[in-house]
Amino acid sequence: MPAYNAEKTLKKTIESIPKGIVDEIILTDDCSDDKTIFLAKSLGIKTFVHEDNLGYGANQKTCYDQALKTNADIIVMLHPDYQYDPRVIPFAVGFIIADICDIIIGSRIRTRKEALDGGMPLYKYIANRFLTAFENFVLGQNLGDFHSGFRVYRREVLEKIDYSLNSDDFIFDAEFLTEAAFLGYRIGDIPIPARYFSEASSINFRRSLKYGLLNIVVMIKYILEKNKLWHFKIFNLPEK
Image 1 (tube, helix red, strand yellow):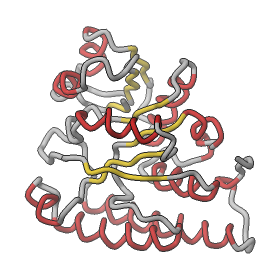
Image 2 (cartoon, one colour; image 1 turned 60 degrees about the horizontal axis):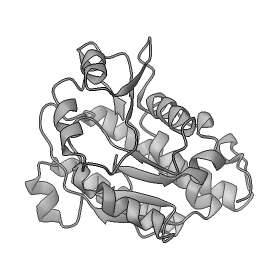
Image 3 (cartoon, one colour; image 1 turned 90 degrees about the vertical axis):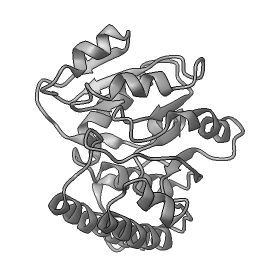
């Protein structure tokens, strides 16, 4: 769980995780200015704290570093802001266990009506549809939501991809999926209910615009790398 100011939603998120489905919960706090850390520790969650605010991508890096120090075969990334419904975890994990996929993404957009009725801002919906279609075309994938924050990984994926080279900001997720596609890992998705409310983490229009442009840049890098026209350090990846 990469956390930032999740005091108001953390407990509800934890209580919604199906009983007995996870062996251990790890939370990394990116220098919250509320009581997230104290609440996490009171709930018995293994907690790691950044002394400075390093960014969403950096927070995920710490999460995965710590998860790989355990014996976990499957790692689930769930935001503690109660936006994504944790009840889908056993179903998502099932695709990894059955050796059907190496990565599962939670798709917030089963239908346009559900996404908008759930509170997704219209401009985010339109941008998501455009970017997801473009990224699917470039990467040869068929994901319903390239930008979801709910992700499940086979351990090998996190061991093979050197995510330390990725951005410390929100574009980390797009870089990681692009690297996974580059290596030929099997990426699938399942529908996941998502909630939009004031306490749920989100980025404003200006940062959303920057995020969208950076996604396009990542796709251009992939095209250049795949066609051996230019080399980028994020593709310093070992063979599977």
